[in-house]
Image (cartoon, rainbow, N blue to C red; front, side):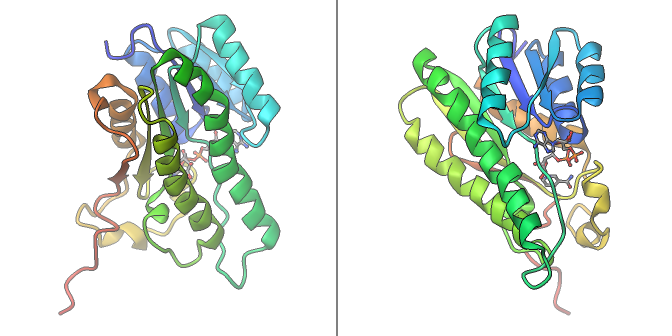
Amino acid sequence: MRFDGRVALVSGGANGMGASHARGLAAEGARVVVGDIADADGRALAADLPDALYQHLDVTSEESWQAAIGAAEEAFGPVDVLVNNAGIFHPGGVEDQAPEQFRRMLDVNLMGSFLGMHAVLPGMRGRGRGSVVNISSAAGMTGFAGGIGYGAGKWGVRGMTKAAALDMAGTGVRVNSVHPGVIRTSMGRSVSAELFAHQPVPRIGEPEEVTRMVLFLASDDASYTTGGEFLIDGGQTIGHGRAG
Ligand SMILES: NC(=O)c1ccc[n+]([C@@H]2O[C@H](COP(=O)([O-])OP(=O)(O)OC[C@H]3O[C@@H](n4cnc5c(N)ncnc54)[C@H](O)[C@@H]3O)[C@@H](O)[C@H]2O)c1
């Protein structure tokens, strides 16, 4: 199997897409660390997977990342795959988003992914292998009304992915970003169906459809792929429908 002998850490892994990624990695042989602040959900999921553990991980805290990596190493060995998936969404436009919400989204969605990479990449460099998959969004590819703070963080994740991929040049470590459209999770359900009704694939996406892309990028199947951005959005961002 693609992840036999590999250790994977999934942030925000207790629910939604993160839980789907954790299940997918485990099904293909990975030993999985589910990291989240939702302790009860995370523990229940880890107990349901063949070779997994739950670790409380607040992605905004450097110490919390060190503790998660330490727990992974102690139980399974060094982390080979990091899925930077934890994220939050507070709707709001440039005039009405509360600055505190904007800051919080940058802290979790952007800073959280930076801290994850900052924590795992030195070890991956030393071992000469590793894959980081940063979960951005369709909102990191284009503008969305009412998504000023969310978009700022997700565009940041996209840019940071390319910078990190370049920083890891020649080391055997790859860093890519994934850009889901509207996906059926608690976050996705809060988005209006208008957003996907006019897509070429006119429906909401399923978490497992994103997981298949995450697993590809995390695995050696993507050995020639780094710094890339991968849309799974039913065509939401490719352009507008017919004018007349
Ligand atoms: N659902 C969508 O439509 C959609 C679309 C594009 C991108 N995304 C992105 O995909 C990722 C997963 O989203 P989802 O839809 O599964 O959301 P979700 O709300 O179902 O799950 C998010 C998980 O992140 C965890 N989390 C929140 N803050 C955290 C923190 N500080 N530290 C650790 N964990 C934390 C939550 O507890 C939760 O388990 C997010 O980065 C999100 O921005 C979602």
